[in-house]
Image (tube, rainbow, N blue to C red; front, side, top):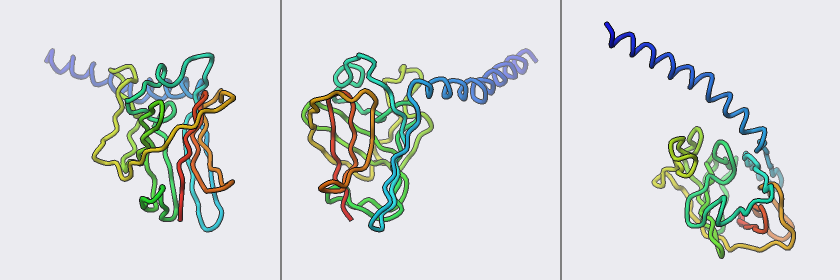
Length: 185
């Protein structure tokens, strides 16, 4: 009988954390890293990126806050998602229509960019303090390496946007770093 009481108490606490605590935590973190959406609808293409945009706030970003050589969920809060309604190519690799989680491995000279078929709830493990991701490497659909461009003016808020100036691309920029991911039909 004692076991059932303890089991019931643990179950109630677990449900409270899941249905009350987690939504409150998500709401609070989004005050500091608001949700953003970038879209591109032109030339028969329809794409969108949903991400949360943390701020620099005087911090050293790459190599410190976002360590080199480790998988980053590429933004804050839930994993960044990339949706395309048509088949496209990332550089020369075919990406089928669908929604993918977007992960990166930043380095000083280049970043690895992964489009993953799974979209986990939060993207990092709570027990690791956010340092370990929940990305399943086996679900990577595309993995490309992109050179780093150094910016002359720092970007305060992490930004992902589409650019079609010379070549259609998905641009990720923050602090003094930018990567340009080419998109082709």
